[in-house]
Image (cartoon, rainbow, N blue to C red; front, side, top):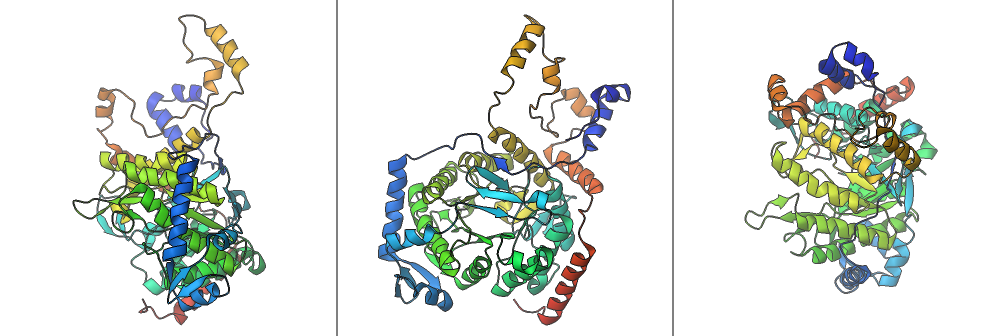
Amino acid sequence: MTMTDDSDIKRKGGRSARRKARAAAAFDYNPTLVRNIPVYEVANEEGVEMIHELAMRIVEELGVEFRDEESLEFWRRTDAEIDGQKVRIGRDALMALVGQAPAEYTHHGRNPARTVRVGGRNMVISPSYGPPFILDMDGVRRHATLDDLNNLQKLNHMAASVHIAGGPIVEPVDVAVPHRHLHMAYSAFKYSDKPIIGNVTARERAEDTIEMTRIVFGGDFASNNTCTTNLINSNSPLVWDETMLDALKVYAANNHAVMCSPFSMAAASTPASNVGTMAVVTAEALMAIAFGQIIRPGAPMLFGVPAMTVALNTGAPVHGSPDSAIVQLLAGAMARRYQVPHRAIVNCATSKTPDLQAAYDSMWGLFPGFLAGANFITMAGGMIEGTLAVSYAKTVIDFEQVDAFYHFSKGCNFDDLDEIFETVKQVGPGGHFLGAAHTRKSDLFIFPSQNNVTFEQWEVDGRKDSEQVGLDKVRAWLERYEEPPIDPAVDEALLAYIAKREEEIPATLS
């Protein structure tokens, strides 16, 4: 970020001036992260093959249900065995289909400078996804509104290491369900120029999202290039339903990317075993990826799971545990084995507020997500209450952690060893490096909101906890937000399309 010269600040008010200068610093954007650290393997090659073998037994002997007649008709064009709604297929035929999915793809943004590359060593980060509740700036838990959606979209746009604008980042409950998807897509296009995530809750809503991308990108381009990346969940164990399959069909047909993400909850929807969970979700995900290739060979697909466990004392889903971390790391290994991009979740908390538990829960997602080498990281900001709610304060706190992990994943820098030697020579024994030229241009990471002052200064500053610091930052960011330019003709066409569809779609439909 561009900062004001520190010597000028000292002459104009000391610490208080420095804080104001940091708050007023120009916003910058980090490009697609190219990971420069190794992935962490929790299983060796033999272990990965054992999971693969179990997944293949599930596919060949048990099968996966596709509860959609149109999808079954597509499967009948292959060597698959159809028994009612159950689809079984030999591993060779399955792997031949999965092999058509690309190992990398380009996800286009409204602003070409925000376009990202997904797959390989590339990592992109996306914001919250889907909660109906908000923990607002007054500390009140309530249903989210369209204003909240737009505010969060603005924060996402300003976050340096968030590459994706999102789409369903929160459910605006004050908008009728049948019209809601239109406003989600518009918010993403209007308040950010980063790539977006589409809607998957009905075939028609996916089709509307595609139509809106055609308005923004042009019809032919939007039908042949990836302008959305979209998230579908299976009903684990071993079921893909009509709604999710309809969305997959629409997006794959237009060459838009689909995250085929089984909804794993170890001990509930999957076995009470990290290896068993991985085998079941691998079978589910591979069947969806293969199905996408039947729709359109070469359509981009992603492999990955939300990696939750279940608290056996309450039955509640749990975010943030060592077992979920192992599942996430295993998912990375399986994605690499099949040479498809890996999707992971981070910064999800079971806690109801941005407290210490939320920090611990989030860190159990951050480390495995980044160390697994995930290519598309989702839910990276603000998720609490087991993903039922988004906290404004936690959103920006999480974004700082994402910035830190972006820095961490760039790894070591060996470019300035000679300069380091000369600096050590200049400082000499017993000196310090605070004033050295090398230090002044260092890129050592500093958390903007980290409290590292004395206890006395903290008291003078108001004894603020992390949540209050986060809320102060949210308000400061929203005050400084500048809407990214959008072609007025495109904006007008998007609004006209929304008005047309709202007239055509009864607001009372579910």
